[in-house]
Image (cartoon, rainbow, N blue to C red; front, side, top):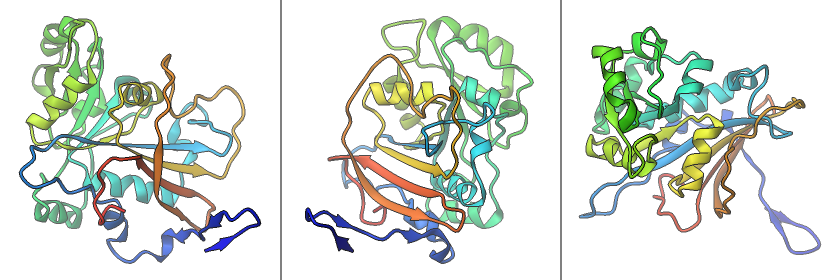
Length: 269
């Protein structure tokens, strides 16, 4: 740690390649619940952005990543109970079910988790193609969190390929995130990882239900009209606290923030 003339203290970043076996999953462990308090969802976002703030390159976020980002992506999925994604992102990024190794599955079992977390797709319209990879290439049944107006038609179209749930609140043509999180918590899926896209992250941010953000900063400039990692009509100001910062030989930064005042276990810090 060092300082400059105005007294600001700076800390040298840790390197991602210096972590031992299992180090990433330990570093990204979810907070442990308080004893005797019913468990609610801890919502973690994971996104990647260029150094000029672009969330995609050639229209896809995956085009920004390299080996280190893929390792963090895998570690976050390994410790999650459920992966939440918007229908548009699932379509553009060609989502399939989560794939885990035998070692990862065993680690999850030891933590009391199911071997493989399901994908939960947020879509107020219910427009998920019946032959989408997220439905067909998966070991566990995905969840479709949709509106009351769309739930019957979506169930009829998707049949037994997904569990379709009504996640509406007071507006039958929309999805209420707090209702959606309650449905996940009722199923014991409280370690929530959302992978966006920007519109979905904007909804979580606007409704003040995003507890944590994991951001990979890719050392590239993309220019153009690429979206930011969070978009939407509502502007909010949510104070965040840096939990850790990592880097690697490719020059990527791996930043983890949680909401100021949000409970976070020592293991997760």
